[in-house]
Image (cartoon, rainbow, N blue to C red):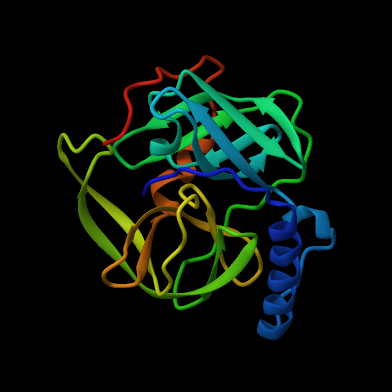
Length: 224
């Protein structure tokens, strides 16, 4: 999914908190005790493949940001913007087959989103979208999909969430959340002709967030 423009995430964070809290209450689930737990969405800007390429990421640990690999692959520099403050980010995981990247950001102090430990079934998902808005993205189904790596060099079979919403340009790497605000997937592509979006299922990438490497990952080449 093409990424071309930078935008502030502050209003969107507030909307995310309100929507997730309301959804949790409606479902009878417990909302987070600390509202700031959901204020963990960041903008990502890179240089190298285009003059400036922009995506979205989510803080999922202490100075750890989760996003899509095609947002940062091939970049000479990666910048994370959180609460109007810019930080240099270092990719430590870059899996171009499943399209997931993990960034280490020194000095980034913000609460982290939780990774869901529950099965992903017919729950209402939330996709954080461009233009500082929020879209409730119902889960159409979970499916194995035969796609390609981000360079379109070979086929890859991945477990995907198919969402009944078309997210906007600039939302690659955005977290998909369940009804209590836990991460269940990451936006990686869209099908405009069908009006749907695809997110990588958490089962595909959760293991990458354990025992993270300390060294910078090879930056690879730009996605096609």
